[in-house]
Length: 308
Image 1: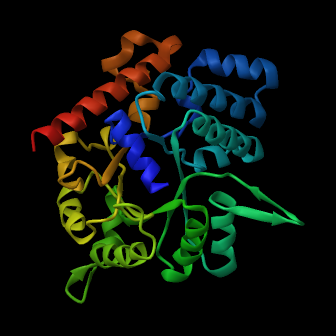
Image 2: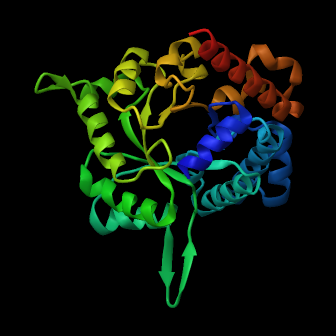
């Protein structure tokens, strides 16, 4: 799947991923009204609004982008109907030949970690048959519990030819409370990065490992260090746009070949119609605003890479 992700990036010339992280207050009123008219102001109504909203954005952008990253918490808050909307979103994106990164940030041990891995990336045994649960192509994984939490995902990735992105240095302001702590003279995130390389050596694609890393756009200097530590690791870069990251800050996340990183923007794209820059589209044409925001993001990052 890492090979497919790279192939999609080359095909679109767009090292970006759209974060499908819908909040109800992002969803235009006309979509909410229609969903509530059919299902009432219920969890089912909210899930229907989310699904229709996502579908509109995917239809408007799928030809420009290589991948999407739905954040499962935004769906889980609406219970089982929300998870059904998540599953429908994953299936729809895959039908458009998009790579799906399930942003699930799981991290547990033993059989629990294995169950998460099977549920999201693998196939569960039911009697004599096997079924894929959510069937994403990649999943995000929290390494805080060490190899016990990551190895079960690696086992499933080996079997299914899928991948993971391990949290190394996250984009949030308080990430440094733990991730920047100095251990044996080095920050913890560097040690985690080295561990990601070790795990990744066991699962190599053609040029990059199935085991990727998450490194926030908000910490470009740390990104530069981690790029050197992890030359064959694909980096998922959150924090672009709404969190402050810009294309010029991100060139060091990429290797000289222009590959090695994929930059995520969530509300900067899916709620673009709410920004001053795209307000002329209006809520009715929210998906067209998202398409314009995608084009602007591609131009920003491609331009920065060309000029580095």
